[in-house]
Length: 158
Image 1: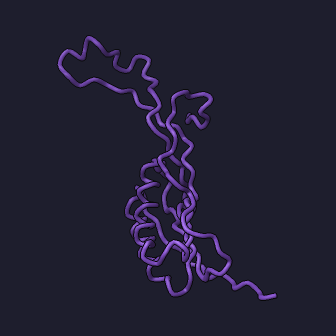
Image 2 (image 1 turned 135 degrees about the vertical axis):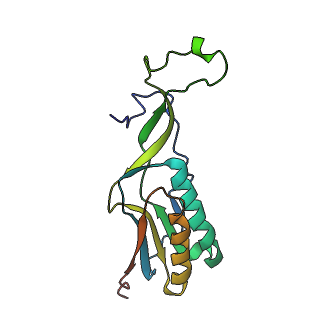
Image 3 (image 1 turned 30 degrees about the vertical axis):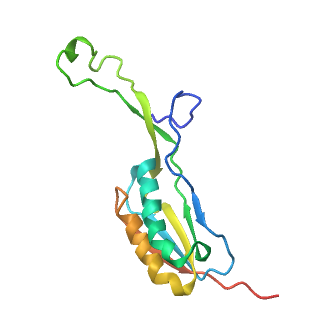
């Protein structure tokens, strides 16, 4: 059973994702691109951060004001590891599988089929760069994904 609360697992590290929202939120974006999972996996927080950084690097060319990138999956599953010593004489120090509960080493997000991982909003002229950014972000994740493109409705002028 997974730990999801730091109250029950003291010493659990924080997620490595630096910012969950990058860019500027504006009402005049024309397209919304979502990176959707095609598998059921646990994605570690450093993989989510690598995906965000890769996508953000491609989008830096269009300017910080012209896009909004949001990480939708939150890593809250606490991962544990029973660390083993692999040097000479280690057999006298270790207990093997006896009391092999493990210590917290990181956090991960549980992602199901059809879950959104990244969400990106851009203007119409930056759609090609946004597709490149989603492709760059996809390569850092441990499962198959696809990009869904949705055209947003224009706000009605008052």
